[in-house]
Image 1 (tube, helix red, strand yellow):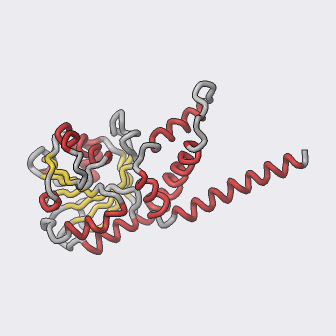
Image 2: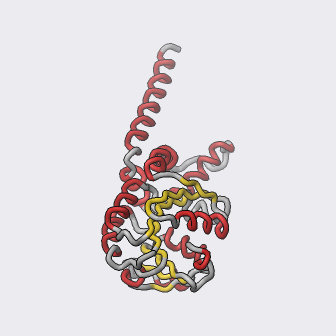
Length: 257
């Protein structure tokens, strides 16, 4: 996002996928850019009008100066292939998914050489961003071109985000633990409901708060975190192995009491 693209209407931003996160993006960008959105869902009219976004075809969105792909991992490759022949020279393609290795490879393989590619992962969602996004974290992985510098500067200066520069591989290694374990614990505890709500400790309240931040995520988010991340299975197996080991140690100590 060059300096000339900061003022609204000097640059167009297209959002592909207008679910909960696509709408969160629009909420924070609609004062600075002309926004177009594409989503195959037929029930978006009211949400779009509230956010000052114009619904458009995929072809129209793909011709924007900046294209943000916020579609699920399951449809990501088909979206990239669909826009590849339409993108303008010099366009910036950004993704916002929870995993980075696979989407980055797909974008680099199928998108034309004349576009820049910046893989990102906002380390927050609609729940954790309900009180604003200033101070929250976003990971940026430069894939092609130099526009990641301008994207990072915009995110810092205008949105107040804490930018973490990394690589797709390092991102997925860290996220396999950070997100993978968090979502696993949340899934298990939700299955143990009803959980205590009156006689609780501060530490339990924090765990409950963490659960509330992820429990309403779309199922494909959990699927991406646990199955699309190449390092998640190893971390998950280690976590359950250590949990089983701890449980066995406790049972052994009971038998010797």
